[in-house]
Length: 257
Image (cartoon, rainbow, N blue to C red; front, side):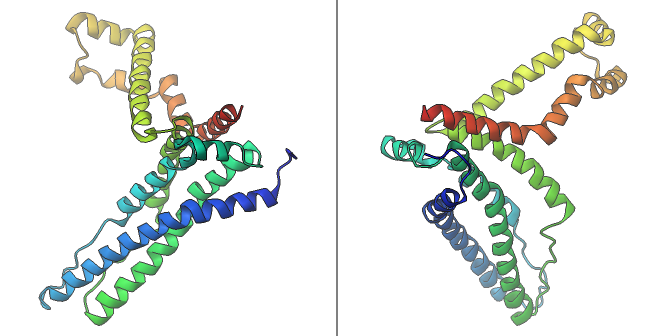
């Protein structure tokens, strides 16, 4: 098989992903959002006409939950031996398989969410705001806060993308368990370095048996500039997502061998 990047194979993989995973997922999401919109319209219809308060709903949380489900199921073919064999032996390179999954989970999913939200937002604006004469909430889906939140969501989802490729089953809770373990290790590492480098911490621990919160302000300032904290923040913001995407590629490559 030609190992060069091939758009024809990408197109074939995209068609497979669209019909087998993406479209069914969005059908379910559309049904759920439709039910919520219908319920809101019914509630607003039977509310007193004198009551101009409109009940709001946090759609971002719903979209994040569905995004999590889609991401953690990215490599659903790995769950069963027959489908796992079929996926790993597909006539496509490892990079093409992973890039296709990545593209649907990180680009097309959120574009689909924007289109879906925009459509249903105008539906409820017409029904509740137009026909019922009630003021519907103004909403900026692409606000700065949402874009910053999306950045962090993509970082978190990159970990679950790797987990989906690593664990054939139970990726969602196994990633959480590993996250807890790694977080505890990181906290222990920070404590060891801080204890070795900052005399303030050693003196506080020796004198009081624990860190005195009232006198720890200078230490907090030092810890904020501590290179371990700064590196961790830089890694999470800029390196974590590409790192886990690349690790996903290596994990699928390993499974193909």
